[in-house]
Image 1: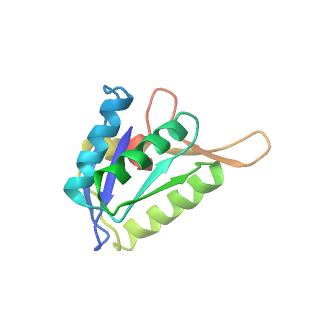
Image 2: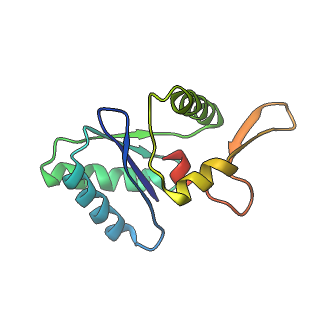
Length: 136
């Protein structure tokens, strides 16, 4: 699980990743971060197990009394391509800034595009690496 928060000035102000919490601890932790930073929207990947977390988080955020909107999205190669291209342009044009987070920067540095056997681009971290913070 990875969490990234951007402010109104398009600056990343928070970034973390973890895999040491069960479902309940994960939801509780994310709700606490939401209470602290008060984001307008939270985007939750709904691929695979993400659908379960999306439902749990949506209920927990509603019960917390915050005004944060929880939105689900599905990650595909097409959506990754758009995301990567937009992030590249934003960083190059200095319209967005990201934190100097060692893990995040390493994930972004090794993130790669490969062509599938059918010639379609695919976007992922190389084998043995993660891309959670980079994608977040």
